Image (cartoon, rainbow, N blue to C red):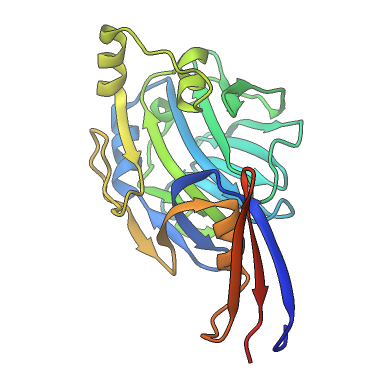
Length: 280
């Protein structure tokens, strides 16, 4: 853009506390969480997070657990695969499962709640609180989970880790992220996604609180509010972006850095509209 150019930026103001990633070399390391999950050796579990991709054209690692070089490619990966969510698990023996949603689950710059629930039978993928249609590309052993891994020592948010190397760096933002060592029920998943306002009975809530191994809320700190207490470590340019919406992310990524740039913003229903004028 050149001086005097005008751009209209419009987006929803639905927001979550978030960590932002630039798609180049950003990641948050959660190695202690990987070790703790393997040590707990649970055959069931739940991984849930809010997520907003900048685009739906790439392949990006969202949550990844892996092993250092020489551990036969052990990995548990939740990945953005263009506009779908993919879940892949491989022990030393072989790939146990490779599962992908089939209904274009993602939209660019739109918050989505992703939840992977591993029951005693298989992993299931929930999008915005609802179980979605999945394709089992590999189903050699759908019961694989942390109990079957032997060498996990690396955890990542915002990229993939495989044999000690990182790639598939996320371009987008990750919201609050939680890991339990029990399988949440469909109702509990809906509550996490904010579409069911009911409450658990006290006894059940006590069980879930004890089973919440990790909880990164990104409320100004990288600390883990779960029982694991694994503070995330920033690598690259990842940073906490506070309450982040579609509109604020659009403003942020447009690259306005000139003190002479002008902005006029007004609200239009559930959206903010900003008229941006490039400064000289």
